[in-house]
Length: 151
Image (cartoon, rainbow, N blue to C red; front, side, top):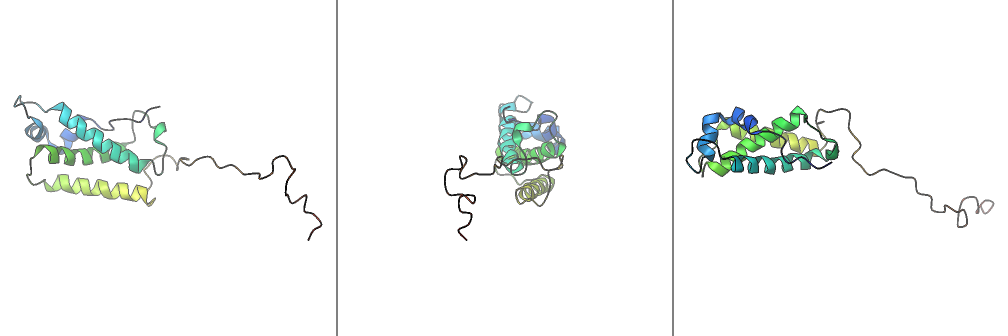
């Protein structure tokens, strides 16, 4: 299964920024509606960031729709700030957007440091399978059995 390219939707960003602000930030063509390419580029960029932190504790191949709410909200918070950066042309970011981005960054750092669980089922196995290594599978080399009586 492929890695998801978007964990949140344009509506999630509208909920954070407000529909009018989203249009003002992304309406490069002056058509009166948000430019989807810019919004989706920001969502895809932030989805990659969130998944890179998520996969420290979880297998991202197991993600399926509907995605865990924590992933959706974290991606939306980061994406709203990214849309603001891309569309505001240097204007100061509102406190609620900057604060949301800071909280999301802190949450992802805690995932990476394994100080916070992502809120799914108990930690899923994301490591390679461990196998017991037998240095002498045929029993013809240097083994405990062959050395019996030497000490």
